[in-house]
Amino acid sequence: MSLRIAVVKGDGIGPEVIPEAQKILEHFLTDADFFEVELGLAKWEKTGSACSPDDIRELKGADAIIFGAVTTPPDPDYRSVLLQIRHELDLYANLRPIRSLRPNPDGSFVDMMIVRENTEGLYSGIEEIGTERSTTLRVVTKAGSRRIAEKACSLVLKRNRNHQLVIGYKGNVLKSDLLFRDTCSEVASSFGIQTKAVFIDALCLDVLQHPNNYDVIVTTNMFGDILSDVCGYLTGGLGMLPSANIGEKYAFFEPVHGSAPDIAGKGIANPVAAVRSAAMMLEYFGMKQQACLVEESIADLINSGVCTPDLGGCESTSSFGSRLIAVVCKKEERKI
Ligand code: NAI
Ligand code: MG
Image (cartoon, rainbow, N blue to C red; front, side, top):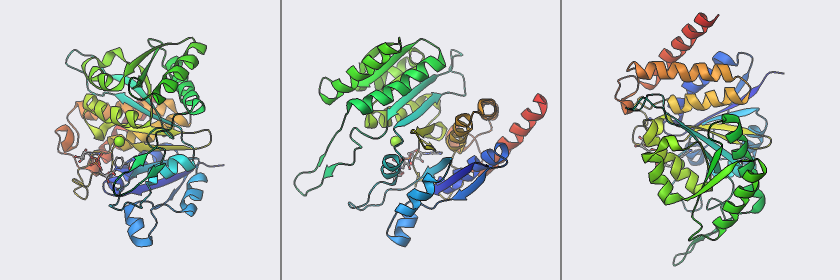
């Protein structure tokens, strides 16, 4: 049976970058059936719902989902589409590779993986909103910490580098983080992996100063969200960072960035984060070689100055996408 891929463009630059990612997917997944699901602010304005139960059912019917970005409307009753999807599909692991495609001045490349717990923490969605006092419950469970730690440890072994797992936490202030840290340490020791627990604020600076000291970092939900945007600095900005949201049954691939209303509609958004997210989907389907080919092709283009304005170039979103497909095809021909 052919693969069923759900395509969610969303709002802002989502509809600009996702077609470029879809081109790559269509190139490699020639038999796949692509179907669009409309979600986000535009849909909310039309129908009063940004993501309905029917939409969730459609997403669950896909073998994988490629997603652009959605804008959060200014309404206190609005429920975040992404939180809803991550909870409904139980996408507990958010994998955010931080890999530079351009060499650092010393010739090295940044290559680390942030493994962000994706269903608990401060994004549990359990909130009481009042006019004088509002609270958000930060949930850390043993089971939730264990499964994300297991995912992180399996990645440490797969990447086969320094065999150390860094735990980003803030246990001096948030006692709930001690459960997270201790559970991650227990799991790691059962895998034979050493751990180093680092306070998240210090970690945000140290990853920038010494990125090559890091391999896999596991952390709670909001810390992982912030840390990965911080790490965008190491790779050329938010237009470069892809991610995968993985659960037991479903897989959802999206750029780390949001809908970027400041540049939406101008045709200048960098599609690389979305295309790299598509490459992560290929890898998820066992097509590692094809995923590497996409990464190499992006690197070739960027290193020869072919890039969108955020990286100092003058390509449009779609002209970069077209040139990328051309490089991919050329590389394939050379390999045959
Ligand atoms: P953002 O990631 O959309 O933009 C931050 C900055 O990065 C902007 O200056 C933007 O122009 C730039 N940028 C982002 N992606 C880019 C790309 N591909 N190429 C070139 N430049 C790029 O974050 P912001 O401004 O905080 O949020 C805007 C909207 O997006 C909000 O409504 C927010 O709720 C939503 N959002 C959605 C996310 C998602 O759907 N996964 C994630 C983060 C924010
Ligand atoms: Mg974010």
